[in-house]
Image 1 (cartoon, rainbow, N blue to C red):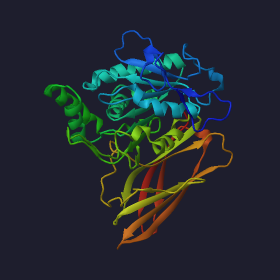
Image 2 (image 1 turned 90 degrees about the horizontal axis):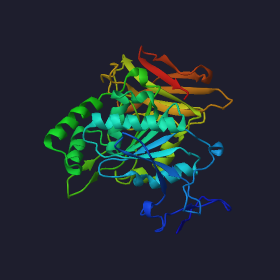
Image 3 (image 1 turned 30 degrees about the vertical axis):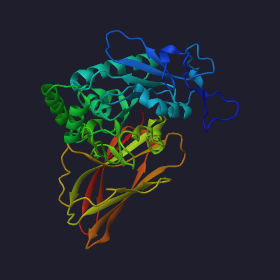
Length: 386
């Protein structure tokens, strides 16, 4: 039966559901071609466009594709690559053509799993001749990819890592391990040891080469096994909370619209990291905006504690992340406002205006916002062109 694409223009070829006649791909919504490899346990798939003739594998002429940077989709515990059918279709409709997905055999030993992931990334780069890839990982797949980025030199191969509904809290990760895997107590303890290493952030050096997006929804729990996944912000990532359960967050249109701009390779990505607070005696909030962009508040709710220990290199706090098209003609300008919460009223500390020059990236630039009463807020601007 044909899948009616609501955005399809007259005359365009449709996406077509797989029919019972296609035995090898039975029960799949869309067409995945398995990549033949040697010496790698996991199964690697590539998403393919379906023409009306389902008897042959069909891949399009990539000269007409908008975006050719590979995107790898990674599932979590006790799942498979087909959970990304909807997301893969959306990526295709928006011009992405190198779409891959993994069937993961085990997520218990993160060290072994990370080595397997590394080999698959290498395979994808060989197929596409790409310098870097982007990764969209659901649930525990996000924990694995973050481990790979930190300990298997993954940050050198990944430009954007989007973690969707990932259990970044040790307690909830432990519950998921116990309830969703058939691991022994020894294997669970080993996995938790690996998780302890993940909880620290990536190095300052890699902050502008790797962009991490952490998307989470409302609490998901089941009475049957007591598993709970809740949204946990990460200090070195773009943190986005939406009102959706962990089991559905990877097929939410809002999630796609939030993540998709960062997957476009023809953009510059810039981030602002909070370094130190000097002579700040009241709770603080930052308001940041760039030309043509909506103002963003940090933190989104509440305030930064005046004595919060943020001035340690191992714990960078990203307060702003955005992207800009490389072909824009008008200059880009970031504006940072700082406010203290004094007796339940916002008192302005100061304002800092930062021009963004796209012809001199990548770079790290150190900034200071000075207040009229001796306050100082030190920041670092990371800017990167893929």
